[in-house]
Image 1 (tube, rainbow, N blue to C red):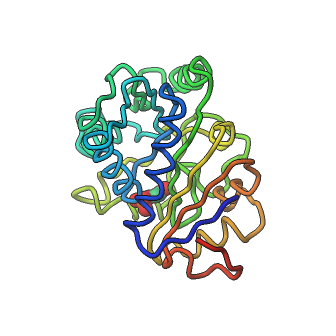
Image 2: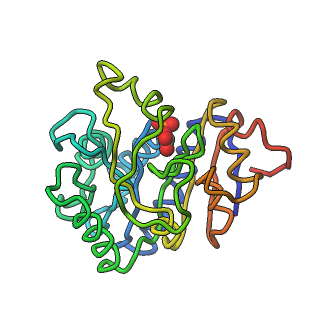
Length: 247
Ligand code: PGA
């Protein structure tokens, strides 16, 4: 695990973009796992800039998103599908057929989850998976208590996660209570993982994930078992770490 502590959110975003861009330049048909949430927005802005100004092309890249709310149509402004188009896909040269976001309106959700796993396999597996971390230690929508071997499936969100995400909806009652999420086993099969975190609200989760015991109660702690994990965080998110890591 390579922990890199940056002075600011902007530096976290730039360092993450440099790593993603390097992997795309090395393998233009990279299979890239993506995350939603406030944290990766800066990374996506930087990738958009690199696409426009530095000749970084996504024309052969395939993406797989981690998760999606169940019950929100893709046209809903708070669906993760919309989020990805708004914050990244519509600004870069990626063909729409190359992006994959779980479909929270699928008729047969379980069948859809199996299909999603199969699609990842068919593309040769995820080369690099971008991850955020929940204040409760969740990874994607794998909430505390999720099986560390889990695959893509339906999960019920915890009250904390529903509360954390309520800021994006008109009222907390509109926040979906269930989601499709890649499993922890799915995420761990990515050849490399890049976990990003910013702000003091993540400090305890970051500490538990990288210095605490590996436990299903802190799903992100599984990252300690990954052979190629990069953890790029700002000083506030690193403020509860007791070991010293250099940037
Ligand atoms: P955030 O969410 O980036 O909006 O903080 C991360 C997460 O919950 O995984």
